[in-house]
Image (cartoon, rainbow, N blue to C red; front, side):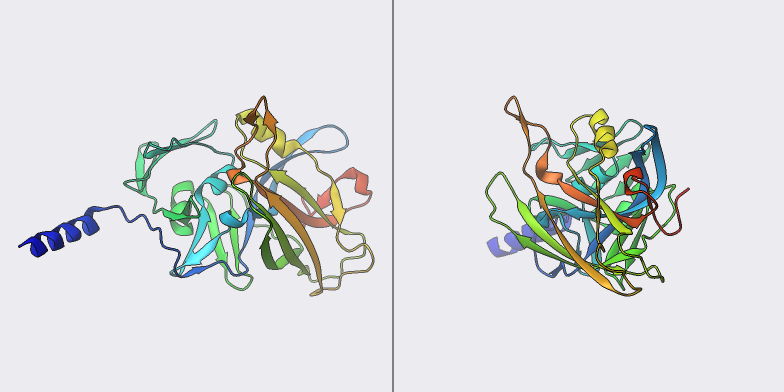
Length: 300
C-alpha cells in the first residue's frame, strides 16, 4: 500500500510541477554567435545626437551567458536579452514574479507558472535554469516581444531584429568564436573571446577601411544611464591595417568580458551579472575622426 501511495505521489508531483529544467545534458555551445539589429544612439563631430536605425552589432556576453542549443531549441539568457533591448529587471530572490520594464512597457514573468503577462495578454514563457541564470527559447521570446529572431544555421548565428527594424547585415561576418575562461573568483568572471572575421561583402575591402567600434556594457540601474551608455563613444579600431581584405578572406581578433564593476560608496555601480560587449563592424568612410562607419547598404 505504501509503495502504491508513493507512486501516486510521484506521478502527481511530476504532472503538476512546473517544468523548470535544471539539467545540463545535451547542451551545445559550439560556435554560436549573437547578432542584434536595431536603433543606435550616437553623436557625430557636429555635436548632434542622432538615432541611427537598423545598426547590426555582435554581442559578446560572459561565458555563463552564452546562447546555446538544447534538444533542438536555441536559447538566449533572459536577463541579458532584455538588458540589450533597453529593459530593466526587478527580481527579488523569494518572489516568483520578475518585473521587466522600461519607460513604455511593463511585463510580469512568473517563475512558477512560467507565464508572462504583457498588458491584458498572458503567454507561455518556458524557463531553463543554467549557470544560476534563466534562459528562454527563441520562439517563445519572439512571441512575447514581437521581435524577429532568426537562427542562421550556415553561420550558427542568432540574428535578433528588433521590432520595427529591418535586417541589415554588416559587410563582414564572424565565422568562428571561442571562449577561454580566466581565473574566476566568487565576485568576478572574466573570459577571453577569440573570433574570426570573414569578408562577406562580395568586394575587396581596402586596407585601413575595415574598422570596429567596441564598448563594454553593463545593465544600468537607472533609465538615464541606459541612454548615457549608448551615447558613449569608445573609439574605433582598424582590423586590416596592413593589407586589403579580399572577399572571403579572414582576419582574427580577440576581446575580454568581465563582471568586474566600479564601487560607489561601497555599492556596485552596475549589476555585473549581465556584462557584455558590443562590436559594430563596418567600412570607414573618409576621415576616421569623423567617426562615421558605414555598413552595406550604406546608412542614410
